[in-house]
Image (tube, rainbow, N blue to C red; front, top):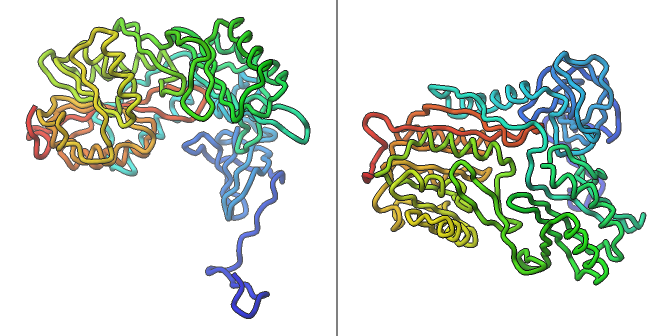
Amino acid sequence: MAAKGKPGLRFQPTGGTRTSQLPAGKKQRLSIERLSNDGRGIAFFEGRTWFVNGALAGEEVEARVLNSHGKVVEARTERVIVASAERRVAPCKHFGRCGGCSLQHLPHSAQLQLKQQQLAEQLSRVAGIEPEQWVAPLVGPELAYRRRARIAVRWDSKARRLDVGFRAVASQDIVPIDDCLVLVQPLQAILQDLPRLLQGFVKPQVIGHVELFSGTGEALLLRHVAPLAEVDLAALQAFCQAHHAQLWLQGEGEPQPFAAAQPLGYELRPWGLQLAYRPGDFVQVNETVNAAMIAQAIDWLAPQAEERVLDLFCGLGNFALPLAREAREVVAVEGVGAMVERARANAASNGLGNASFHQADLAAPLAGAAWASEGFSAVLLDPPRDGAAQAVEHLGKLGARRLVYVSCNPATLARDTVQLLKQGYRLKRAGILDMFPQTAHVEAMALFEAGQDGPSNPTGA
């Protein structure tokens, strides 16, 4: 800000001269020292820290600047000069440009090691602890695992062109893609023909984005910002019929089926369950790892036939319904009312009368809720990325002796671990869940058990 009366004056920042910014596109040769938690190579050059997409520890690379902020530079690998012995050829031709998969150049075993390291570092640094037992990662196929995907769509008015694909690395640009190796096979077939369909619309500028789903059937959801032209809607309907996919549309409100609602959901085969969902609902994208995750959670939680179990952040009932096969009663709690209603319907359709579902603000204390008054023997929670700081603060008062925490963010898991330790719980086991192979995204599971004196201030179970 200029001083009053002296418009030309600028104040010097405290601490010396301001670091000049590097122009985007500048190339620099770098020596990569190690990997960051998100899988980018880290290099140090002329007082700056570089985070380089597509680089591995020990490599010499030529990197191109994407952007810089002060002494931090984000870049991507343009050329590998000296390669790591670990480097492999990425299976996808779009690797390095598409922002979806950041670790395809790293063997799967090394990907798992990186994720395990990230979990261990967070627990050690934030909570000052490691579990009494590390368990092997839960894994599934490296490719063709993803049963849900959002396809980016943008109308370029100057070029009069519709771009269809996925967001580029560190950019809002769209990489044109008509094949994606991590999608399950039915969705790969839809994606292959999708760009040609959308680019043939007479009013392509009204498309917001497209989502693809695969479960008991396939579905395509098109988000539009203005009414579709009749000819475009007819082409879209014919496309979905040809691919045996349901068509869903979303304008101002919630997604709606174009035709009469058809069954849409996914199966939990080991438990003989089928869960209905609507496009837009949260579902785990990896069927194989999801089933293994549920099985491990039940094994660790070890619900007994006479016990009452609490499931927090229950969603559609992904954990609650299998748990209801094992325990006397399952109380499931979710913050989104529509999800509670669908979970309740899922329990009814599967003949599970011992599971009840409740809507509650999970950022508020839980002990005073009517459904919590009897206490619980065991608790499972599966919060979003920001964790469950408020929910775990008084979990000990519910009397649970066993607690399984499923996390999609090791940082918030470690933070919440601190609170659980204060309440007398011990971290018995932990391990990663490879829900998103080829990416640096880490999912984890941790088992906490009450000490000999039990959790602090229990109400009893």
